[in-house]
Image (tube, rainbow, N blue to C red; front, top):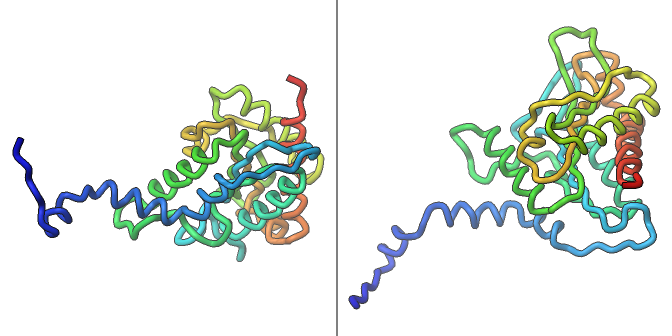
Length: 239
């Protein structure tokens, strides 16, 4: 057997780039991973023992929709933080893909930033091994006419459809301004997540009246409350 010893420079060359990127990824998401690993136990509450991931869309370099002076990334983060408060109050363990105005890029990327951001969200989601996932967004279209919050689900996930329909019922009941129905949708977060999940479009920023509502803290609270009630109803069902 021939033993080969590498000098310092050779070891540096031999160090796999993939391993370096993995280390950087772990460091970048250490806060989220710590949150996932931290045991939480609040017995006696309705969501005790449940883990829910909230994914506020966009953030950092990516503002999402911007219209009528309203920025999607700010609105959905505010709603998500309110939703987290309700869920934690009911005993759930809540993991968020972001808690501040940040994106999920590990390194400055010259290529497809959005794809890297989305894949890193999936890493956080799947590491949490959640019972449910809720991705929070706001809608937009070229016409200012359309409005209304709406829940979407992965077309081949029957449980996600049930969850989306329940959340849609609560959005209609609490907000009293949407007659939309839950629909299947082709969204990366839903397609790649290992858990049942929904994507909630909280309203149309392209509609000036709804944009004003979505930018109002009291209305954001109502949206969060409606989503929370939907999650509570779904998880409280008799199998």
